[in-house]
Length: 542
Ligand code: ME8
Image 1: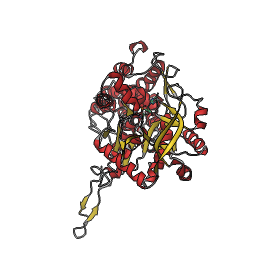
Image 2 (image 1 turned 135 degrees about the vertical axis):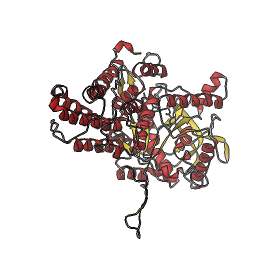
Image 3 (image 1 turned 45 degrees about the horizontal axis):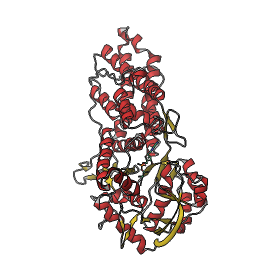
Image 4 (image 1 turned 30 degrees about the horizontal axis):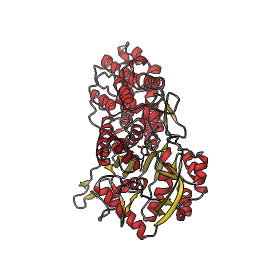
């Protein structure tokens, strides 16, 4: 049970006060997405893995802040709007709403959705840039460099050469550009950023990405322009309206403007406690901004740094980079088709277990999706839950049996075995290692399968004298699956809730650890048979 605090009359004269547990805070962010394109698998992926973390932490009773939103200023949005003959703000309104709806549709449980056109954001960004000017971290200067027009990003000579003077994103040539701009003195942060990487080895993860950043850091840091004059769709530089703030600087600030750190009181709605963020989760292509430029800006403002920047790799599709022209682009329609045939939670499962969280890209393929669904969800979790609940129906009148403690065979100490997996699953999620967290939960389910095969309750049930043993075996199976389902609730909220409903377990309590303690399942509870994941033919799908 949760300790809600209160006076305990241990002794009438000296009541002992136990303070209610203070939840820790956990805060996680996605990149904010550009509104000049429509959402696709990449956006759903990053949002889903953050969502799994956020739900899991909430289940543990933590005080969670999960932030996402849209990045709405900049040349690309201005150009797209002009092409459609509408105002940039109208385009931003339209597409931001699309992102918001889509995230809702995919069960993303973000606590806030920030838009960089929100007046609160714009006001705070101007305030922060003013502070940078006041602290002489920003100055007006002349700049010449290699510009990636699609990404609105400048590259140094060394980097441009490495990229063969072509955009790594669009493949279009980089152009030589000169501008008078406001510059951020990134070069003065070289040592401090190196120190940060040395002191906090987990600041950038995974390790391979950290090494990539260290390599680029060794090339030396140059000052970076933080304003533009060649278009107007942006936040004006305070005191110099002929410049707008570079969209990347504007965007990075979202992580703290959403909390109100630039407001007079230093926070909005008591959200100051959510800074620094535990995780900024981003794709590998935007890691430099997050791992180097962003901490340097925060250092200049004397604000605390996020704990970890987690940069995942990319989804490719059917073995190739996704592209509209190859016809292998996994857009919303394609995702919806998977959702329609396999279900929302199967899609979340595939993203969370097979996604590119490590150093290499991951292939989204129909065959692999089907294989993952069939082996993990149909044959393992689904089969185990339906088999167990069917036996309860057959041998125990549909009621959870009593565990008399008599030896039920199998040689597994279930309470300590499940406790070990539960702790491993929680610890892995804390490290944002979704695959390990999920695999610890699945280890419980796999063990149940082995246990059923070894102890064969379906055979024992033929002998009425073995009824107690059958009950003991099935209690252990039910209880183990229940515990696994608690751990998997964050990744498959609807299916795990369906299981809870069929087994009359109620809603999750918000205290995952206690809920996962052995013995929580009350004998006599009515257990309905479940069929959570139907077996499908591969041609049934998109
Ligand atoms: O870069 N595989 O926004 P964006 C996995 N506005 N994830 C992918 C992906 C893929 N193939 N493609 C995209 C921006 N993503 C900026 C961010 S943050 C202060 C500003 C995901 O709409 C991944 O998270 O281009 C990537 O970083 C993000 O979408 C880029 O979204």
